[in-house]
Image (tube, rainbow, N blue to C red):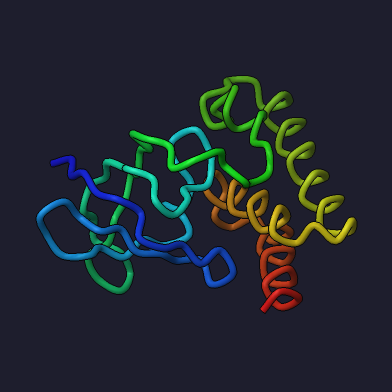
Length: 147
């Protein structure tokens, strides 16, 4: 069952947030769901639709879809994730090239000192590939610098 709510707050550094459910209690959201279905980071104040799922620590929001923008998204551009669903590409070579491009982007963004954008890129990669070691490393290093 889909539920509507409003993003109350998001902490990209710690990888979680809270969604205020319409007519109900607040629902936690973890880093894997901090990106909407197009790979864009959800932001405070956005109206969203989501499902309640069983997460590792209990009930949480999952399958988040942004219904109404709170303003212009401030995250890194996710043109790769937005234009193509990496998992749906049948050609392994193309998939590998796009993942390599995303990994290069997160590394260069971090090296340029754009740590919040590096976090956004790393979260985008981890949403597609939860065990991607390089994205995990950049995410942890960027959080350490900012946090």
